[in-house]
Image (cartoon, rainbow, N blue to C red; front, side):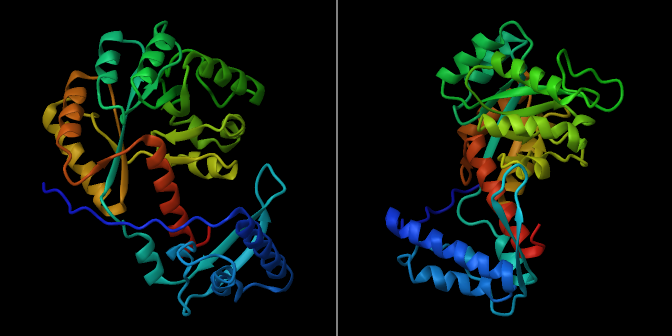
Length: 336
């Protein structure tokens, strides 16, 4: 593994507030005409319109749409608000390929979950680099104290929320299940949040049944939106509906790419770390979940000390980068 050369970047001068207000007004004027008269030419002309108001360098490269692309823009209300939501379709294979191309050093985020029940291994996880996010189960007696220790050590903290699984798996007490009324789902989630001080978001513990049920996820996302918290999808089922429901409520969300320790031996964990690196090279950013097993903690500590050619980033930054990438792909491929 070799270290990539540093990439020189220039930072564009930020526009003034007055300039941004002017551009915002122009945006909604254009969108109103698009809604009333059809918008085939709006998307291609919109960057030029912004260019009249914004200084060079402010308009992102992603705003440039090839003249050969077929573009459609429509307005629809976003779920839970009266604000219009822009939807567009770009039928252009070249644009899709460019949207999928990572720029710069590949970035990786790592989450250790199932924490709180075993104080010894939880403290070993706290000793990992601060960029590693730590997810705490709500019901262990030591969770509040250990979560505070982890926060003081600089880690991003998650509530590892028990959710209903397919079959006889028991995710633990106070789990969210599909048979609960919305008010009870909110009550249980509120209680769990109170047990994990300093959380930035949640991820699901188990949940292969709960996370495919859109109506059960909706009160979860509504509460997260009110608390400005994210939902990191552990992706315990390929049919998970977490991402589309989260985004309909404006909740930041993305899914894990790799489980590090489904097989608990050092060779298997090392292989999964290599798979994680490959995913990061392919898509720019990748996220792994591991558990507080001795083998996993040792492997992650070693990798974090020798990760030349990769950037170890916080989970929240990884979620934003993956969300932005998904949005570019969505624009390029289907507008969904």
